Image (cartoon, rainbow, N blue to C red):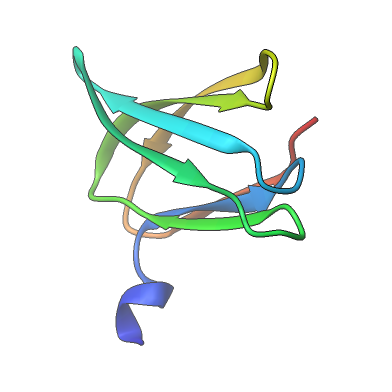
Length: 77
């Protein structure tokens, strides 16, 4: 449980959307949001690009930097 308080990113978006996470020149993982649209992804320190997709298209893209705390992106639409 302590890991949930560590570095990472969280927020809210479209229910059951896909978030593709990539670091320097490679894709790390694809994450599916919870049915209510929330997400909480644990990530090591570093810079990442998040691409938010629904069934038909990319609808948002964010470049983030993870430090020693959790980054809250709020609502992504």
